[in-house]
Image 1 (cartoon, rainbow, N blue to C red):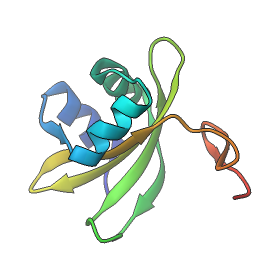
Image 2 (cartoon, one colour):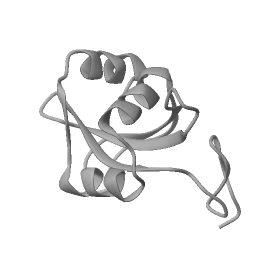
Image 3 (cartoon, rainbow, N blue to C red):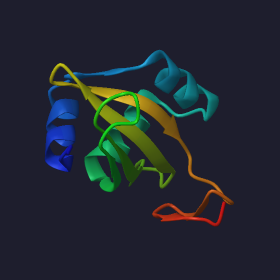
Length: 103
């Protein structure tokens, strides 16, 4: 399992990287690197994934300082935080920032 404290420390220490997909998705939603870091600093883990083909990972929900809700799927690769994907949660997949919808 991944702990939110470890994620926050990795971001503070600049000991993380984006996957190619994660950075592309961040750009697709017009999110800055700073906004994603802000969401990780104040986020909470919604779901933990034991192994989805990319190793242990989790879904973090948080907010940028401007109030934008952001979801970040994070993993661990050789003790480094990897941002697998980033997106703004929207219906119908999510009812709100912390609750899945019906689809």
